[in-house]
Image (tube, rainbow, N blue to C red; front, side, top):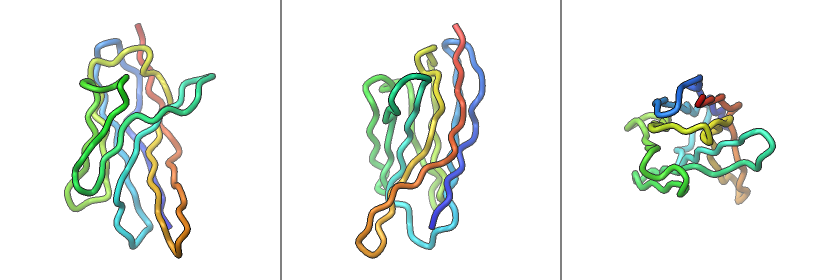
Length: 119
């Protein structure tokens, strides 16, 4: 029903900035919310941020004040602007949304994009 594709990952130094993008396609239904998650080697997948169709946002404590999630008006594109990056931010970043159809809720995930922050 929907495909998600992340891009924008790369290598940066501590204190640097990076902007990730997530493009959703293939669904005739509106995307009501989009999450960003991340997973570092040997660690559990961690929720990072969410944005709703209303424009409301929420963030994990570890990224508050440094990361900003946003969306392109009228488009199924969501961004994660990351600033003041730390080595602890190194991870594969994924976007995610849930769609309910015929009373069944299903989660959709992108392939992930690697972010590496060097010290």
